[in-house]
Length: 85
Image (tube, rainbow, N blue to C red; front, side):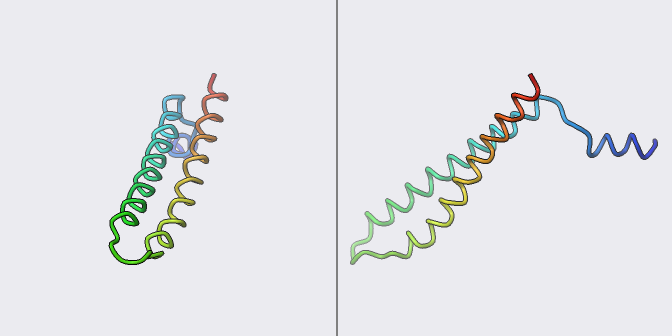
C-alpha cells in the first residue's frame, strides 16, 4: 500500500451519506438545548425558597454553546448536501 492510497483512505473525501452525520449532530444539539431549558425551568419552579440564580448561571453558557453547535452543524449539513448534489 502506497503513501498516496493511505492518505486517501484516512484523509480523502467521504461520500454523501456522511452528510447525515451533520443532521444527527444537529438533532442531538437541539435536544440538549431543550433538555437544558426544561431542567433550568423545572429547577426554578421547584425551588421553595427565594430565587436562586445558580442554575441559570451554570446553564446559560451551556445553552449558548449547544446553540452554536446546533447552528454550525445545520450550516455544515446544508453545505454538504449542496456540494454533493
